[in-house]
Amino acid sequence: MSAPVALAVVDCPTGLAGNMLLAALFDLGLPEAVLHEPLAAMGLAGAYRLQLEERRSGGLRGLHLDVEACEPEPSHRLWGDLQRQIEAAPLQPDLREQVLAVFTLLAEAEAAVHGHAAEQVHFHEVGAIDALVDVVGVCAGLRHFGSPRLVCAVPPAGHGTVKTAHGTLPVPAPAVLELARRRAVPLASSADLPPAELTTPTGLALMAVLAERFGPAPALVPQAVGVGLGSRRLDRPNLLRVLLAEPLAAAQPEQPRLEALLQQQAQIDDATPEDLAFLQEQLRAAGALEVFSQPVQMKKGRPGTLVTVLVRPEQAADLRRIWWQWGSSLGVREQWQQRWELRRDQFSLTTPWGPVRIKRAVRPDGTLQCKPEMDDLMTLARRHALPPAELRRLVLTLLEQQDQP
Image (tube, rainbow, N blue to C red; front, top):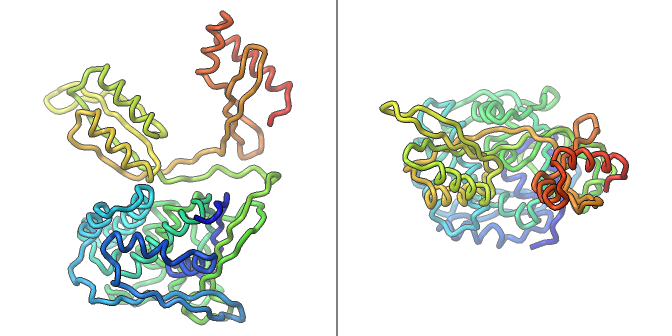
């Protein structure tokens, strides 16, 4: 793996597409083996050929990528079949979850605009070989560069019409609008660009899952730039750039970020309070961001408990194993949730009573919100026979008197 970087920025002034993203990663030095290995694990070795070449667009160089299918694609392949193929492949767990997250979002958007179940979305809509190469390649490629934080510029919506398997459709394509609606993704005006499909469903789905936010990049120090070229000739360079960079330590406080999470839930009426407490403890230990429960009334008037978990997509599989191992429910529901969060960090404060970990968050106006870790306060309160509330007041007073790290 290459030396990891802290930040990746996708600049897409003339469009956002999966093949342009992947071409830019290849331009950054991504080895082709990083793409071929997971696709071979999915049984797709020899099913495609990469046509990667250096070209010029508007006088600027970059790499252009076409994916050529080497065998006829099955005519009745459904998203449900593709989902099982991805789940069964021996991929790295976090890579599998990212690929599933992208295709699930694509399938749900296509299903919504066509009015049928996601499992019945046809192969040409979310599973064509070029989409598989793009999605697996971009997810694996970013892992190769250390899974940096990803910021994506606001992509242009496009206008006019586009020819698809469903006939001529308006631009932005219905699936693009549905993806943007579901994930609150902004779309930029394209009034000064020729009529065309500029942002594709695959490109937008990739960024909707992988990017932590859409908008201007923070202050940064560029380390490498990769350029992926589009096929369409425009009155300007048709390109997408991926910047690998380090953020400036003195950058302005960032705005709250919107992240996509999975919510897992189960209603349980056949477990003791001790069993439920143990299950929730194991879910937290496995990486759940939030775990909480509430009483519910279930069938036949039985009192039960609704257990809810929020988890990042790459950890969802680990938590499912916890549900099956320690829970009594025969099913776990999942749905996408959005969460706004303030950027935060943690540091240790030396005090006369002992070290205390401090959680620190930055509000949008630049002010700090600091909170001592309760476990540390309880430990020191017992050691020094001080009420926790008094110890908290003393620690916060000390914190105000010191320069924070």
